[in-house]
Length: 99
Image (cartoon, rainbow, N blue to C red; front, side, top):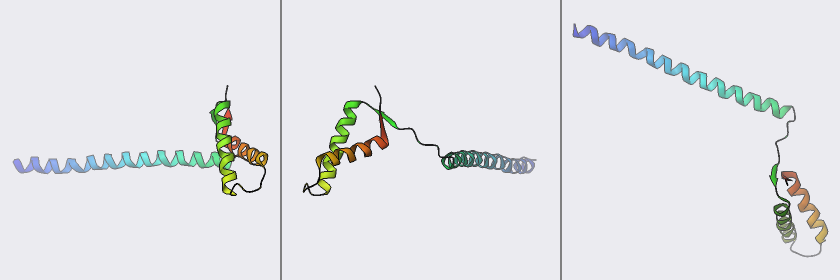
């Protein structure tokens, strides 16, 4: 009789594995659907939201970016105002001012 119980236990184990496999497959399908939605949104031209910053932080970031623009050209020649406007363009492409 002990042999019958062991055999019954062995048969039950594959059922648990099958249930576990179904869960993994279901999770993969959900992940694939989410990725497909993101790709579809990207194709439609949905733009990512800009990060909100204060006016003071924006000014500080522009000043720092303008410094690096001038440094890149070796601080020789160039126009400080052009550097500032280029820095504004770069920062405004990523951030927006919130009050």
